[in-house]
Image (cartoon, rainbow, N blue to C red; front, side, top):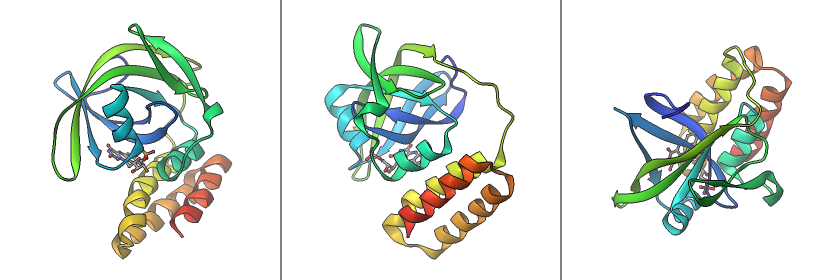
Length: 184
Ligand SMILES: Cc1cc2nc3c(=O)[nH]c(=O)nc-3n(C[C@H](O)[C@H](O)[C@H](O)COP(=O)(O)O)c2cc1C
């Protein structure tokens, strides 16, 4: 299981020229993902059969990958478990998994994961920051808000961005401004 914990681990998933925030679910030592159908991540996992979980504390990367694409030079190839995969160039640690779509519904695909390898790139010890946590929360609601324009989601985003402004540093405040542009 490495650095993933029991519960849902929020990571940046890279799948070959693409990155997006995704949850990796760990229950009783079993790893899985639930993918909403139609994303690049879902398409790439079906085609390539692997995913890399990237750990990064850069809030701007969380926002950009939630709503948009990163340039191709943001990725770097690596070999894990005999497979050529790809991670974020700028990350603190990564874990690569073979990924298999086990079953699906009209809206979701359920994917099981088995570890290929993991590594630490430049791990930094950090105190918990509510501003960073607020960016992750606002991004979750934001990806749904752009689809539904539900005012209840907008209220949640505003709540979390208020915490970002109070508790975050300059990079979290920059991420908040980028997020507001994407959801406008
Ligand atoms: C913290 C966070 C966690 C997310 N978890 C998931 C997830 O587990 N499954 C999913 O399908 N989408 C999830 N999303 C939404 C995707 O990141 C979003 O739909 C993204 O635009 C997909 O990008 P892609 O098309 O490049 O794959 C999450 C978003 C955030 C911000």
